[in-house]
Length: 208
Image 1 (tube, rainbow, N blue to C red):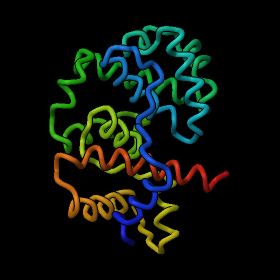
Image 2 (tube, one colour):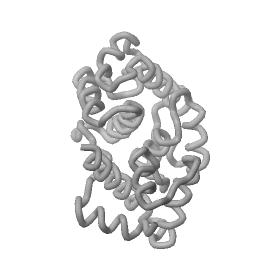
Image 3 (cartoon, rainbow, N blue to C red):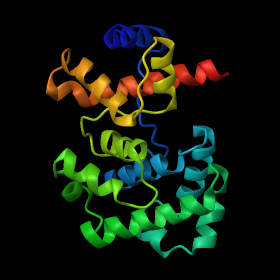
């Protein structure tokens, strides 16, 4: 499986994806970072169109900061994110995530993300409801950390080329090792972002 050639084919077909999609483009940088984190949590087991509805509801209600989410009554928060599915669990996840970033980092994203990739990933995975795909989406798109996100579309793409692994980490290591041979360390983040976005685009088209 030639991952670089596949990227080139996808890029030629779909063009740049400009991911992660930010809805509130006029927001302060910290709010944009939080929007990415919220989107990564809400997109679990649902389509992005459903997530956009939930994000727009949160933005209109001025709930796009960890402080606002923490203060919001749980029932009201559930109502705003209902379109994303599993809204009771996801509301709890948002509460826990918001409490963590406030209590440990005082809402200072730079303080959190300036730490090593290994440390921040381990810390995210200790939070209830945050799995590898969600953690890595936050790290790649909000923290600009060089880590490849594996989702169902990625596994489907691999299967199409006869490549299958048992674990998330095995898929991730496969892509990262293949790509690292072709990219400089400084360009990995943008490449990983674009590649994941293109795979999502491909997967959505195949699902239609």
